[in-house]
Length: 313
Image 1 (cartoon, helix red, strand yellow):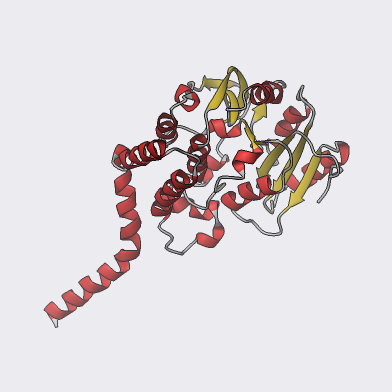
Image 2 (image 1 turned 30 degrees about the horizontal axis):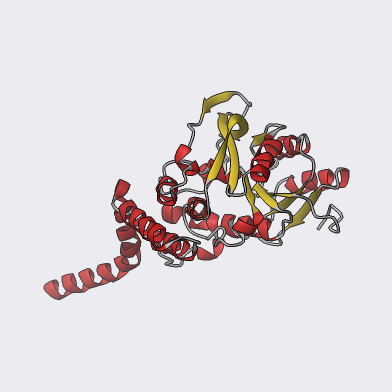
């Protein structure tokens, strides 16, 4: 481990999980070091990168004592590394920072101000703008007003819209609330499940300024991880080749999040109803069936071959 004097706790812990991020990590780090709010610590958790990521990060850690660099001995997978970056972070507030995205200089200042003024808000996040590999603007992402609703079931339903990217997760959130969640699991769409759980604890607040630049490029995790069962190797290499029923685990994790959230009986019931509505919505039930069919396929094939052998024997 390399970096900051751990005797002084920062107000904000910024965690940057990374694997082979040498292409854009300099820009990401520079954008954080340029923040107008300076009472933060940047913890970079390197998931055993094989490119120049380690050398780049160690150099920054030597130059600025707000940076701590930690390197995993092996690649833990995206899920465990995201969990580890929070467990190693310190501060009243927490932010996840992608290694390939850019934060406007006022990002932390604006979000921290909201959390200081609004104790009911779990996470403050700005508007998001997509950029390309050359930093040119592609599009502005739509606002997510339902995440800011006082109605917990409405917030829950918004989070269950898995076809929207969970950019709100890259805002600034309360560490005390994060500790009450299950953090990032090792299942497909674990980031979206975690977003749903955070929204069960309270409303979010969207800062009406485009302070977050999300980079789209061929090597970003959304492209290389794959989807469904194909993504298991990215989320957790230990899951490869093992029938873990990822979609059923995802459904179970959502149900557990509702069960452990600090809700009234009526709120909990409404959230369970929202989850049940989610199953037929956009044919999520097909994914659950597919989960069950994959491990059953070899057995079905053997039964079929035995039947054919019996008919021709």
